[in-house]
Image (cartoon, rainbow, N blue to C red; front, side, top):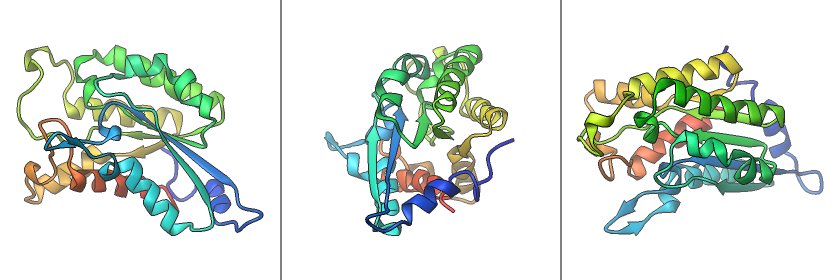
Length: 218
């Protein structure tokens, strides 16, 4: 079953509360495609408005005595098949305490088998290294058609189901941002409120993802 939000990172949070000289370093690696890297506005990249930095800021404010390292290992345009190939070299080599995995937006062009295999590879590699994981379901897009829609193989809902299934199978953390965005839209919010472009969330959209991640900090 999916990990318990109140217990999964309990040991890590205990370490974050320690005061010097007993405090420890907490390293987080945000792995994925372009969304963790940030988004562009007027041709300016805005990494400090992206959820890795927002998550980092919130943790630092909540645990002011801690030493937190936030590493973004994401690559724009990449899918999980490519990300899995470099997972050991680019992610686990930093010896992180926590890894977030976010490939839902670009995995829509993969088959279900390709996506499951790639995510499974990363999850199993992390667990063998005793690294905690939070899987992230797809953030909302603008709703517009893009990138040759006839080649799309997986819907956002289908990808979210795969990610949720893997979180349950491996007992990892899950930031189900897809479900949160869907509830917002059903309550009357518009996609344009959260979109910076056809396939990237704006600052407000990234805040939603950061909120989902903070739910795992008991």
